[in-house]
Length: 113
Length: 114
Image (cartoon, rainbow over all chains, first blue to last red; front, top):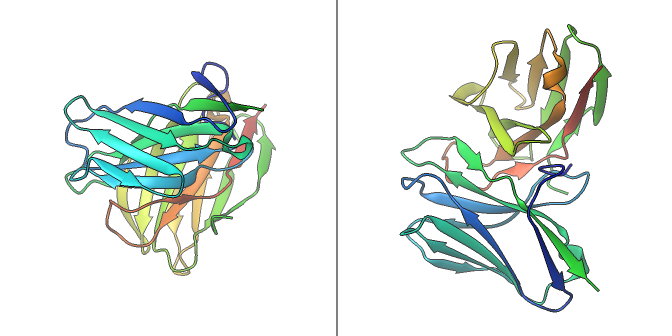
C-alpha cells in the first residue's frame, strides 16, 4: 500500500527529533491542501489540512506551513516516534470549485531508534 | 479505521477480463472518489460521485466505469483488462459535495493482471 515503490525520497530522523517533510505544489490557483500518511498495506490517512487563506495550522504534534509565494507546503512532526514511520504526501485541490486533487508522490519517513 | 470499506482486498485475473471493485463510504458521507495508485506514480484521480451523480472525472479510461447506488455504495468496473491496469485502487469518501473537505480512504484493492 505504499504510494511509490522504489524511488521515493527518504527522510531518516532519530526518535524524539522533529521531522520536516516538504512538498512543492503545482498550481498557483490551488486553494486547499491536505497532508496524508500512508503505512504499508494501508490506505492514505488524513493528517491535517490547510486552506490558502492561512499560512500555518497546528494539530496534535503536527504543523503545516503554506508559502504561496513559492508554492511550497511543509509538514512538521514534533518529537517523532517510531509509529510515524510511513510515506507522507501532500494533495492540492486546484480550486475554482473543482473536485480534482493532485497528489504528490511522497516522502518516506524512517524513524531511527 | 477510516470507516471506508473496500472489497475485495486482492484480485488476480487475466488480460481481457472484467472486474468490479466495491466501496462503502463512511456513514454519512455522500461523496465517493476513486483513485489508482501505481508503483511509479502517485495517486491518480479517476472519478467522483456525489449522492448518486457523477461530479468530476479525472484520468479515467473509457474501459473503466463507475456508479454510485442509492445506498451510497459505489462500484468501479474495469473491463478489457491490460497488464498496465495492475495497481492499487483506492476509494475515498467525504461528507458533502464541496471540494474543500478531507477525504477518508479505504485500504484499497490490489489488482494484479497476469
